[in-house]
Length: 409
Length: 101
Ligand code: SF4
Image (cartoon, rainbow over all chains, first blue to last red; front, side, top):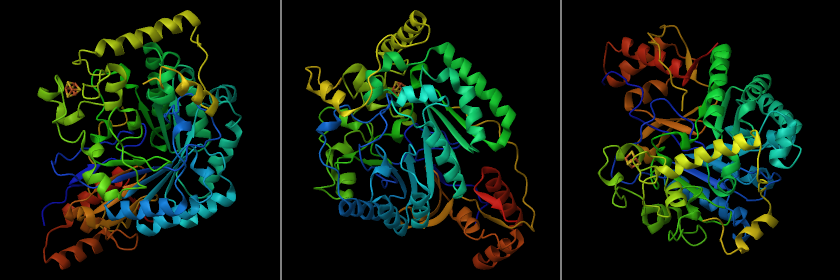
């Protein structure tokens, strides 16, 4: 036995906003490993209508939700294929009345179960049942600490309810984990958000900047913060960290538009992450539906093992064969895998291109221009919004998809 | 991405400490990875065999001295105390383990 080192490898499941983990290192093995992280988007139904939601803009076109028996089968097959981290999200997963049953089965199978919720629908009775069923972890998402802003951003009054939910989460012995989505309209409130998180007894706070897919893509011009806002928010966060010390862990995820290298999105598509949409569509990332020609498989007609190992969609971006220049010959390609395929597609029209967040990309100018446009728009409107934000509801969704522009993609 | 800072040297855990898997984390054997893994919210650590041997004995009952003795007996080795204490200190610092009270 040699001197113990902490771990032979660390695989960080890719949460929606990519919380950083010190020492995280993707395994560089050419062999395809198991789908360690399974995300089930149980429903698109959601009582909120958030402007930054990354659910697809063609929501009404997606088919009927899987039934309980089908989700149970997905859980069993995925666990047999090696999945171990389970995320249950939506929409709002609490809308599903069989959530407790799914959690019970998943726990029995040995999953570590994360519930990602807005908190709407989480009652004392439900949290007690979920806890007894084996739910390991709850992530509460919060849009803002000021009710006015919160109501504005989600088109509904949820602020006080969430404070109550935070109390329930703590009372049931869960760590209080708060995810706050930042953007131009709330980023100046970051100090207030952190103080509120402290009052709620939050132990972990993720300040995640919006990723520009789905609804957020349509609203990008209104949501992208300015560089000055970002610097102020980071300074406020740092001062707060120094005051609270180890009591509260705060992650501040800078929007990648302000970076010069892309994030290692999903550790590369098809390496650890498998998401299943409400209608059973299996996806190598939760936004992959937008990618052209992917022909995503469905759990209704194929097994998880088959989908993960054999489907063309999950093999499409494995390895490096798909890469174009400058990634193809770049010494950094093993680290970031060329960045996000969806962002490459949205901004350049070709998912095989380098993520234009990378300053080596010939399309990087588009990202620079978007940041500049955001600064100009913010200056022109005093930080407000000059175009009405598009809220997520079925009616708007139909308007968008019925138009000749075809869903903004 | 700015959570990771300079990490102080964790040192050695006391021989009479009774470490336990931290609340909210779970250690389990994963046949698919042929390893012990430590599961925590939205992440996991795949442990090497040595780390797995130590962590799987951290039940909040046994002291570090007990764990050293048990591992030395099981693997027919000696002189592991320093390595085990260093690992336990590191795991405590990372929040994988906590002190049972
Ligand atoms: S050129 Fe491609 S591989 Fe190289 S750093 Fe940029 S995105 Fe990453």
